[in-house]
Amino acid sequence: MSQNADQEPGQNLPQIQHSGAIRLVLPATSANLGPGFDSVGLAMALTLTVEAEAAPAPDAQLLTIQATGRDADRCARTSNNLIFETYRDLLERAGHAVTPLDLRIHNEIPLSMGFGSSAAALLAGVYLANHFGGLGWDRQECMEEACRREGHPDNVAACALGYLTVSTVVADSGGDWVMAATCGEKTPWKLLLALPSASLATEKARALLPAQYSRADVVANLQRTALLVSAFALGRGDLLRVAMQDRLHQPYRMEACPLLPGLLPLAGEEGVLGVALSGAGPAVLLVIEQEAADAVAARIRHAAADPSLEIIATAIAPGAQQSCSG
Image 1 (cartoon, rainbow, N blue to C red):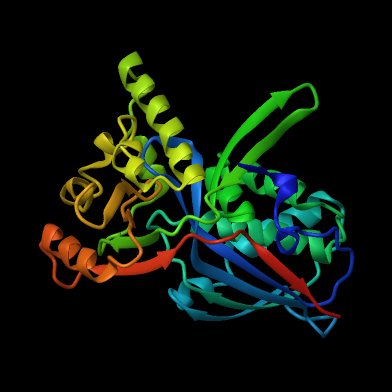
Image 2: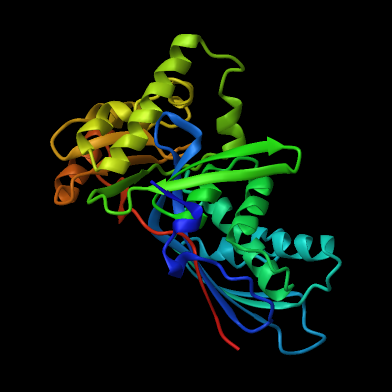
């Protein structure tokens, strides 16, 4: 398992202090993977790409957006835009003028489905403020700011660092900070994402959870979370059927996530290594063997009794990338 400082050089975010154009590529993420509630996230090869440059005219409006890809109309909205609001708030808090931006966005991440779209947007906004505001933050500081805004580290840390990321918020005399580590860079598995027709707000999904749990349920999740990390670190797909089982959140979200009851039994069947709700749902994540995608997709649609069910095939991915010009 590699620590933050040991990431590949291309993933390190330098301390940039100029206002040239910037290009960000941020991965979708799936949190929890069953038992790792608010602590485990997996980066996936579906991305939010943001190209930004300072608006050329000094009297330009604060934000213009050209958006393509999935949910392009929502991504193109300039009011209450999470990327820009994060960017503006950080600069105002730092006492900097807000540089007007021209954004070009291409989105591959399904929104409100449990794939970390808000984490990617928050991290993009922080990176833009760091770049155009000359804040001089490194990747760790950018990640921590986005985690503070998200309220939990699992999606943001996985988006920043990639692969399977485990994370926690450490509180000490110097303030809160995020400790995170990654593994699973060379696992050969593929991912299938099963998407229902209706979305689910994270706030609603969290409201379904109980305030207290039994010791037996907590211990079961601790055991499976340890097994889950071991499976990714060692490339042990045979562990995932059990390692992705959960007793803390999935049982309480079944009614709001109608695909889950029918797809959980596929875990351990031919080609299917493990099954879990993706984040807070409602989409479902299946970790599968490399050559099994077509056969498993057919079984997913049969189990869901929906021949037109949307299924996305993707892969485990590295963390956020940035490149600069000018």
